[in-house]
Image: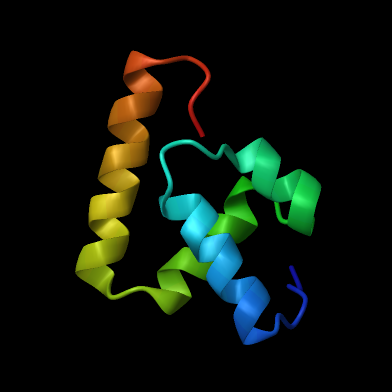
Length: 70
């Protein structure tokens, strides 16, 4: 799947939203047109591997506890 080329400001905004516990994948998709899989790929490519794994663990843990999380 081809992903659009993002300018650094937009890339930073998407990463900030993804790292935030208050913004869902749906919010990111409505603003930037990237679905959950595209956001995960973007995060994997732009974060250090340990940071990416910690983020995925946190998202998974919260989604298990709350149905409407990310």
